[in-house]
Length: 262
Image (cartoon, one colour):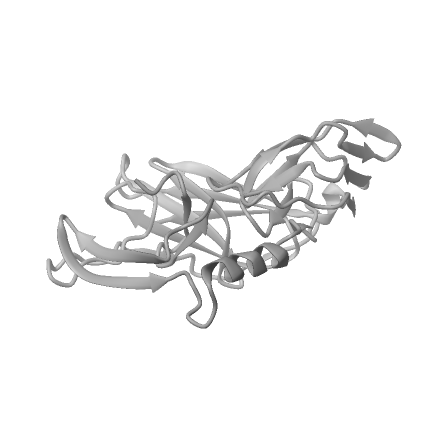
């Protein structure tokens, strides 16, 4: 059982796995690639540098890793939480003494992690438009996996006005009610919003910055809320994907309404 000494992180496309060690590990770790009990490959990974002793290596690593680094997100949007990213998974935290100043009012920030291994957190609040904010987190409020901590954290930000954003409303007409349809909003090929519908619906993408967007729909046939590429050996085809016929231009303080029969 590895759960007591390692954290496993899988990326969004599920093609990369990162391992975070919570405590001392053996000199050699064996990775096994298997499926339904059938082993396809094995890999032995040494955790000790060949030219150095184990104690010397670990002492050097402890001296290198002495600080926890936290970075606040640079973008501030009215409808989104203020994100904070750490360089190590967080083991413990206590936000007593932390402050959120809204214009001239002092508030207690609401905080939570959005991933299972506690690398990314969010300060949540109903932001006012055209308002200034200041975060103050005292030192040693967060502790990393290896006991690392940080100096006092501060962050300033200012929100936009509601009139700085545009909204997109799509009247979606589905071909097969009851089937999952994943409607995604893209900007520069990056998914910035998604809604899942199973019947004719109005889909709203709000608080959009001015610019050009595309909309696509994935016919989620197996209902797992992800796009499946298919399987060559079984002859299974990829799940169908379709794009709205035209690029959509969003302007500040404008609402765009489009009808789309998938």
